[in-house]
Length: 63
Image 1 (cartoon, rainbow, N blue to C red):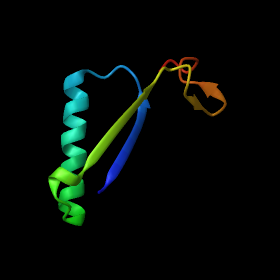
Image 2 (image 1 turned 135 degrees about the vertical axis):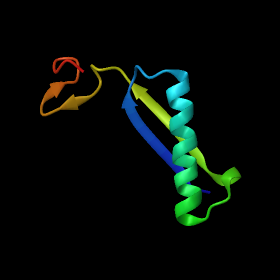
Image 3 (image 1 turned 180 degrees about the vertical axis):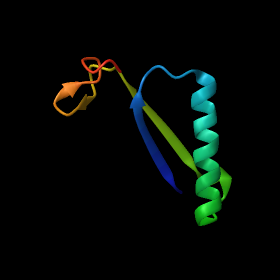
Image 4 (image 1 turned 90 degrees about the horizontal axis):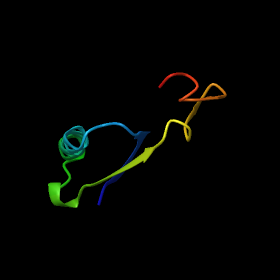
């Protein structure tokens, strides 16, 4: 059972997250011939103060 975890900053719509889940699932099924029912996609969202880039929070960088 393939399990994919996506870590990203919050702010996407439910529709965008659903599209991401579908596209990631399709890519896994295509690339390793996994049955669609066996694919799991987990989205972890974080605030822009919980993600750092180059020693600064994403918030400090305007993201």
